[in-house]
Length: 62
Image 1 (cartoon, one colour):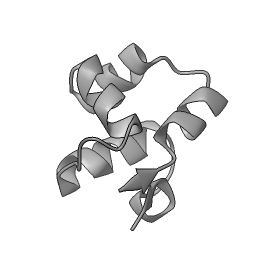
Image 2 (cartoon, one colour):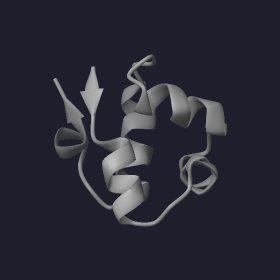
Image 3 (cartoon, one colour):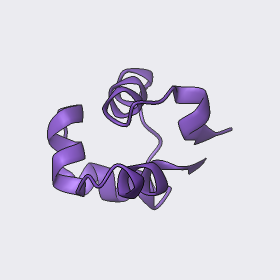
Image 4 (spheres, helix red, strand yellow):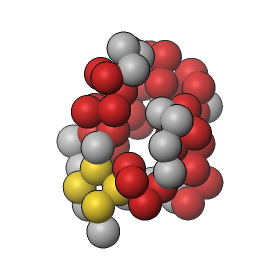
């Protein structure tokens, strides 16, 4: 699944580590999400979207 996590994260000047802390996951999870190697649960998608000040539908391309 494609996403705009890295694009939005860099626009907000947030590191992977900071995003991981805000979403309550490890940095490696953010790395895998950005690379499209991991499909998040709805809860995680929601947490990442909140941390990036966006919505799930704007963050992930289904």
